Length: 114
Image 1 (cartoon, rainbow, N blue to C red):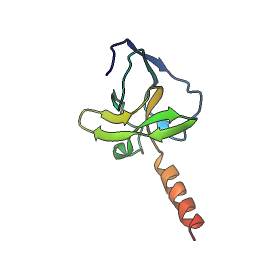
Image 2: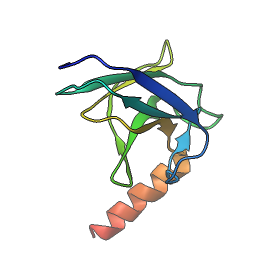
Image 3: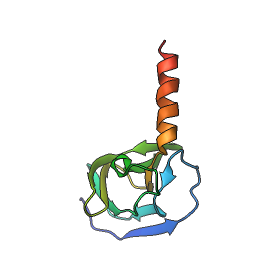
Image 4: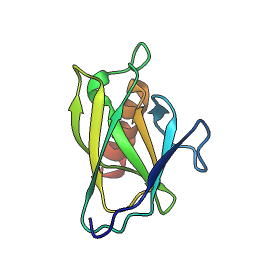
């Protein structure tokens, strides 16, 4: 960190861009007045995925340039914590894809490569 500052987190239930994953809890809008370089580690508690979802598929997503990007570096299943690294702060969400969505996406990818 180059200079100290204040960091705030605003919890929201409605994102500006709806993701294609199932959010596990609120969205987190993180802002800081600190001047920093390099990466920032974000660690978030998450609620258990709904029935039928695989907890091993939990990821931390970061909204950048109108896209939800997976920034996950670690998932602690025992303590329901997901960690990621980013170079800037904005909107974050913990989420998981519905198992059927994953199957449909893989089938579409296979067809497009045929």
